[in-house]
Length: 157
Image: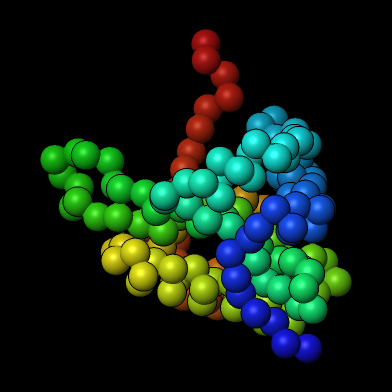
């Protein structure tokens, strides 16, 4: 089973929509107060495909996208105490459930790091739901470590 990584095209939309659905179902499960099942329109994908600072990279086996990572090149906030750095932000990453634990996710992470090198960024970042222990282990195995915690208050009284 040979897996290649390539940029997504409109030919991948059916598989990408299915992968995004699985990802959004996880979001609803982990944080129903913030997530709903959305609709990934052609315009959504077109805006990424036409962008200068983001791409969707797919893991392709036999012409089918069985996983993807949505990568974005972002600049750090312009704050006097922060170093002026750029980052590859992993907006989303998903591998088809029946293809997990086969190294495809790790291959997508490597491709994301290569994407960052090609764009001369300083580091790579993503977020993981606090309850997603398997996800955190996956990222740690791939060189990520916790740098900061995001906290929030649901009540504004």
